[in-house]
Image (cartoon, rainbow, N blue to C red; front, side):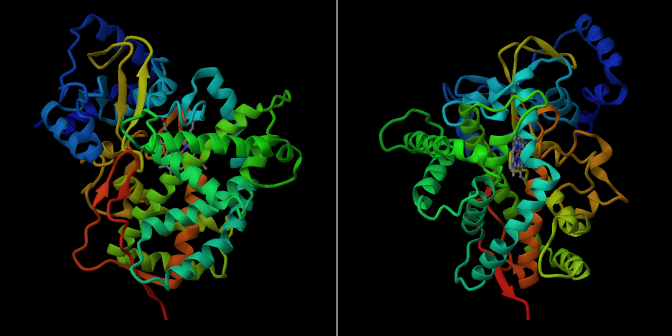
Length: 468
Ligand code: HEM
């Protein structure tokens, strides 16, 4: 089995000695022997697709053991080159040399369902759209969302405690969908509730299927129908939202302008809104499930979060309190390390390039893996253990390489919603831990399904014991 220590050395020069050295190193690489990337294709046509869907993390561990930190697999006749090291993450995500396209890679699963979303754009076009999309994520906007979310999270978490056979995952999905309606759309969805919710649920479900052909009655066809319904829903409301003083994300995006007065077209707004809801939803439910599972197994961290709640005082958690809610922040970081919602991040090579002495051909899909680098023993002390203190100031293990901890990606496409996600997770923890002790039955181990977005395979049966 290749030594995991080699992973750090392999290609590590980029992060250590900067662009001039990279240029020099590239010349050396071009004049030294170019190695063929090792790997295997798997079954005819489907390649390793089924194994990826079943448990991609298991597949990665197995391939790494055979081939090391750079190898290839085939998925549905598409060659995937995996670079599994912090240096590989930096090479791909920072993309200093302009080797990669996010659009071409994400178009493969998402083009029909989420066309022109931010992740499906490149270069100057991406920069322009990202700048305009910053409006709903500014400080004042975030503070308003926090105020709006407090009462809903308070009341829904109270109801959870009355339920028998409580399953956390479907419950948190429902809660975050309701919050998305309010924060993203500025609606309680009273009249359209069922159709709009269902359309969105169908659309997200369709992005997770393997067979992407709209045969009647298939999830993919339902997803495309859902998309059409959502397009109509958003389009009809754009003129009103552009004029409104509303503080929801939809209104912020409709009103967003560059310094030179450019704004989004109606088509852009529809595409961004639908993409944004998808990008926010399953990732946040995934994180909250992992956080609550980890807390149920580590009551001492529940106690630390409760101590912060007591210190902060008050019945509501305000935006200005968030930085002081430190234990919850550490727990979230650690849960995202162990269970990153996106187990892999893909890019398409738009030109031939080299990583170390490996040649990557134009047209290949190149993936990096948050899951894999989050468990490297040279970076993380006892990597399989839940130990949030590793992110504390004293140890700061994540700073051992700036691309060692990448649940939100990095570079130009780094998650735009990371602060919003943290606020939402902290709010849910604030209300849950004021009311309940979280537990699981003795010996319970969450059956984790890592792909395409991580989730508990059994819905996560969480026990909520009311605090006296
Ligand atoms: C814990 C929760 C979340 C995780 C782990 C997560 C993860 C990620 C990752 C890994 C990427 C980069 C993908 C790539 O480089 O190809 C990304 C991009 C993005 N995320 Fe998140 N995300 C989360 C929550 C959210 C939320 C709540 C929102 C919106 C409110 C959001 C909006 C976006 C957007 C718009 C992009 C595209 C950015 C771009 O291409 O410039 N995400 N996210």
